[in-house]
Image (cartoon, rainbow, N blue to C red; front, top):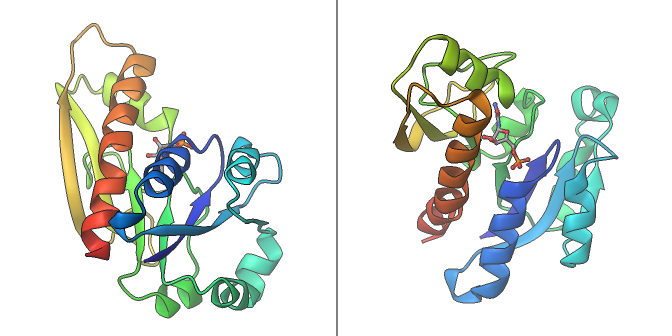
Length: 188
Ligand code: GAR
């Protein structure tokens, strides 16, 4: 599997995935490109340090042209994993990679998904509703936020005392432990 990771921020999931597959070539997954919609994303330096080529997306190019498809083809990308990528994926990209784009979401979808539900917003909402568990959802991407078929879910019990920051930390640990495993399974 020749994987492209799409990110918008810190890229801790992207880092975990790159480190895993660089250390374990026998897994059969190579991260060949990291795409960011933010020129300032910490993930860009992280990828460069690891010799993974990077690409910064401009909103206009992403939504008004299909140039990205040529870039992905030039790296022979055959699978995409969104790892904290906050822009809606346009139809041309979904259609070019049918059942070949995954996303990770920091909650148990369909709860706490949809537009505006990302990062800290999700954990604050989970806390406000007094949920006793949260978790992660790894799902295929379609043209709507957080609505493609679910591939994997895992839950964590929450303590009533947990702050949104503590929930975030526990959920992120679950993401790091599972995203690469799901990608390896799909590569198989
Ligand atoms: C992760 O928790 C991911 O699930 C979330 O953004 C964070 C990115 O962290 N994604 C969404 O909320 C998508 N709706 P990272 O940049 O450290 O990997």
